[in-house]
Length: 626
Image 1 (tube, rainbow, N blue to C red):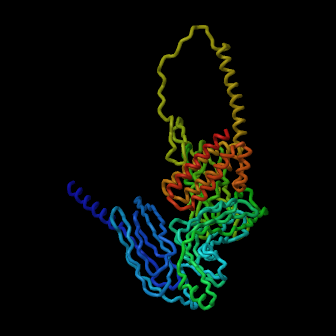
Image 2: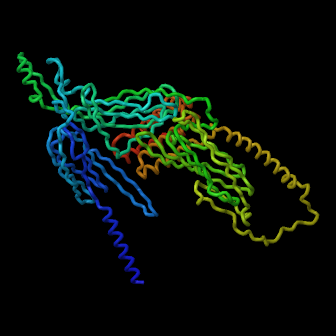
Image 3: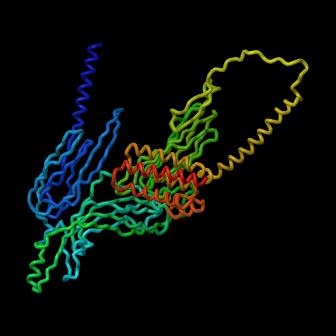
């Protein structure tokens, strides 16, 4: 026994040592080894642990356009029951080569658990730009051109408005309703810029807009020549939009602030053209000034075309894209009160997260519950793809043979330009009577099979107490108690019938039922958002918050999701006599939710603030509507 213990201890120590070695902490620097004069490139330092106090290198021979820009990514993997977590910190510099030569980048450093970690050094060779035509790119600004002394010094310091600007591009300006488009915001600059900050994001009214940009996405750099001038171009935001209604929709401009370096100019007028040209040369006017610029993109107009009415299936719910549909049951032979799971999976590319229900009906002798919906969605620069899984839990209450009719799913195919209807096979279930448990009753309390249990299955013993005796000749028949007991069941049946009809009419009123369940569903979605917040899943958190707020409005006021907008929300709340202060706070919460998804800062603080605002406004709205 002692030998076995010693052997186990040695194996454990070796495994622990191997694990510690595998988790070696490194700060790694990387960049292009050869660049051309005027070329913009990135210098990236990657840390595979949580650290603080990053100290960048002393960069010589290059113009620093921005940096260090910090981003974080983490992942959790589970393989054969072993769960591992990894975290990566990235520090990115945007540099520009200004002259030829070979330049060394010294090591950067960061502190991890009190220990100083240093990176590798880098050597970058700058060669002549083959595209240059006798002029070298001035990274620190561009000279003002224009006449005489009419311009003021303040105007000279402000620089040319064409030195830096942003533009918005849409992948399509005439999409169909529900067809995804990608809007890209690009910044163009030919001077040094730093501290870029998005001060205002569009609200994307009339669109569903999941963000395509990730926290650890690197800036995609390129160069572009406009009117004979070469600009450095970077994608600052890329967003997928799915129009929820047809018509002319306008995306408001995006606003961004940054600090730009512009060259200070002081024109000398001597009256002699030779001396004027000599002293006004850039060699004598090399001073630069940091100027804060507020940039605004162009608005984007999208003309959304309605989906064709011809051939539209009756069960079409708005899915647009390219999808596949599959359904299955986990068993076909069961006993009464045993659970059966029906799983429906929709996979493909398009507005998959807007698919919220299936066209499914079950036999009346089956007890069914709301489906458990699981999303596995990936966002790329080309749009959204993934799968949406609906799991229905069914409990047969009677024995016999039952059929689940084929389940249909319809969508509009963008490539074929027509409606497609997919159908599952018909499922046959053979339900047998439970074995010898006639006193057992099954209850259900959630979406998981583990929460199904039996109650009332204990053995009931024979009652052995004495019976009460009554005097001879006394009869219960025709007495007051007899007639009271005869009339009571009839009265109870009439009351039950009236209540049943009212309940059936209430259930048939879909808008009323959605109204009654609106708060419950909204709070359930907020709980899901709270789980994403604790897990640090920022994109999923803001999607859950947005779905909670918009879904609450849709269910509470019976407004279809496709018709929801800030204006329609305002009109609905005014009709319900909601105070203007509550309306303003609700609309402000919607705008803050969309803006905070992309705003910089501590993401945990932003998510905590948005969660509290959403919970507070829904609570206030419920009090106001009572």
